[in-house]
Every structure is written in C-alpha cells, then in structure tokens.
Length: 325
Image (cartoon, rainbow, N blue to C red; front, side, top):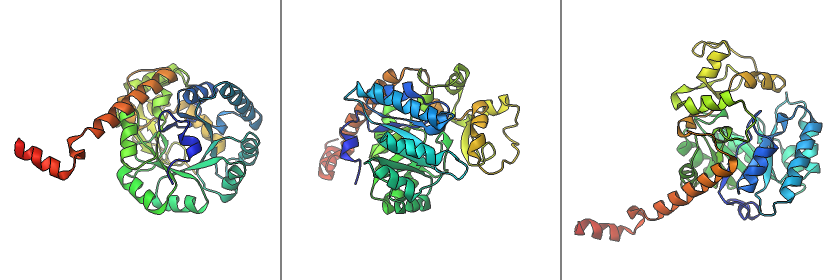
C-alpha cells in the first residue's frame, strides 16, 4: 500500500515531526508543514477542547495561505483515563484534520470517524501483537516505536520490529526511534519504512514550547543519559537522567508508579523531561525551517551515496572489478 498519494505528493521529505507532549504548538506545526514535512501536535497540549479547537483554527488559517505546505496532524490519546477523547474527536471530525495519530489504544470507532471525511489514521505500536490489533481496527498506518524513542516507547530493535510489522500489515509503515538526521531518514526508507518519525530532534528547535534549560540539557546529553522506565508515568518511557535528579529523585532507585492516568501526565512531564537516545546527534538549536533544510539535504546526499555504492552493481560487475584489482 505504501504512502497514500494525497500525502506523498505534498511531502518534500518522507518524514513526520512527532507530536511532542507539552512542546508542539501551532508555530512548530505550521513551520514544519511549510518546510515539507508533516507537522503534528497532541490535542492534550491545550488544556481544554475549546483551546484545542482554537489551535485548529489558527493552524488551518495559516496553512490556507501556504498552498504547497504538507498536511498537519493531531495526536489523540485513546485511553480510558483521557476524559476528553470524545469531545476532541468531535473537533477533529469537524475540522477534517488530515492526519490523526492515535496512541494507547486502537479503536474502530475512532478510525471510522476519521475515515468518514477521508482522513488518515496512523497508530503507535511497540509489538507485532499491537500491529495486528491496530490492523484489525482499520488504521491506515503503523508507527513502529522502537527502542530508544523519546516519550512512551518500546524496547525492540527496529530491524526486528519493522520486519514483523510488514509481515502482518500492508499499509503505511513509519519508523520511530533515535532518528535525528537526513541520513537517518534515508536509513529508515532502506529498512522498508515509508516514512520516518522524528521527535526529540524537534525539541531542539526555536519553535518548540520548552524551556531553554530543557534544550540545553538535550544538547549536553548522550544516549547513556537516557533512562527507560515505567516509574515516571506508569508506562515505559525514556527520560533524561539529569532531569530526574533535578526533580529530587534517584534515577537508579525510582519508586513504583501506579497505572497511567492522563489526568496527571502534564504535571509529571513538566518537571521530568523526556528525550530519546538520539540526543547524541543533536548539537544545536535551529529554527524548524533550517532544521528541515538540513534534513532534506542530508537525506538527498545519503540516498545519492547509496545509489552509487559499488555493491549496488550486478554481481558479475563486482567479480570483474575484483579480478581487475
């Protein structure tokens, strides 16, 4: 199936800027779409459904003046503790949001509601079983959230998860987990993913709604500074060790956390900062426009380099070259 033509034809780079909890807002979304990538944000980044609709109006008006912009998307948390789901979904349908990313639950009614106006649904998964269940719910794409991804993440190697997902699902496959550069996007494509999914890299942009201290911590951090634990929010996620310590907790002896409750998530994530293992590839804070230019350039160079790899030549040519040498 691959990427739907309506989406693919509008992309400059085969990638999505992931919805960043408490960090993605209209500026980040619009500038990402302007630059040719799908820009997204979590509905819960606004404290009310009314505020959420206000952001939708803002984004729609600004993108209407940019006919060549990529489409935008919204993340909906499909979990029993998200008491706003029904109201937020109503706004999504009312505004005909082009791309909807669902997390923590694949529900046929949500998928059908988005499909009613022609929208696409991409769903976060961390295992083959999740992929199968999401496929049964009728989603258009799966986001394989692999080991090292920022936020809620799985622990499977991307090579393993991509192969298993593609064996049971024929729709769009999106790869998430430590992707930070244009070369990483090219690698995702070569692994069989239709799109790459970048989150942490967009935290270090001028449009991200985060404190300067958060960005400075990302610039200093390395993969070894990321801790994968369920003891912050009740679901396994990646956080920066330094932020856990700054919150007065011992990163190596975290108290057990109860079940996930979306009603209290914002309070937790505001003081303990998430990031993925790809932090080591991030060395500067850029505007979204400059970052996307950098990603596009890196992607093109990586794909060109791959096409010129001598091992892409027919086997007979390789043998001749070897003899000549």
